[in-house]
Length: 130
Image 1 (cartoon, rainbow, N blue to C red):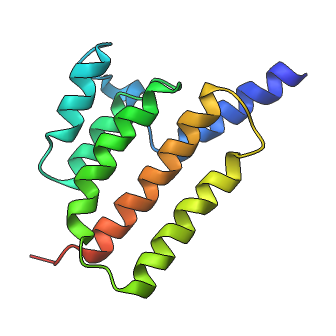
Image 2 (image 1 turned 30 degrees about the vertical axis):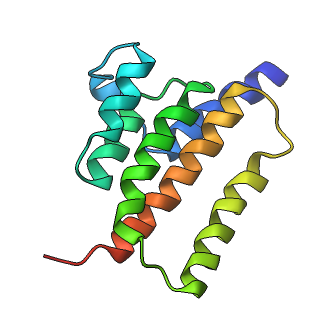
């Protein structure tokens, strides 16, 4: 029963993070270093986040992949007000708290993708409309 519950939780987490693996896979294959470099070299937060999701491993490797995407996203909101910065940090901590009682690399990956969703949201909120 525990295995079924964990499987259902993993499926739900993957579905909720918008992972695109099923529709095309990762263009960089299984080379973690190449994947992190590709994600970090994207020009926009949206493209970087999409690539990070398409290359999701469901393990601790996602922490590095998502970290690269979050750096790209952070370029869009470098001038947050103090209050907005507090809000950003608070929402990131919500992701941390959501998975803090869980152990294992899958939960670390889920936390990383939750944090990426926050970074992508702030990018969308603070990127000027063109």
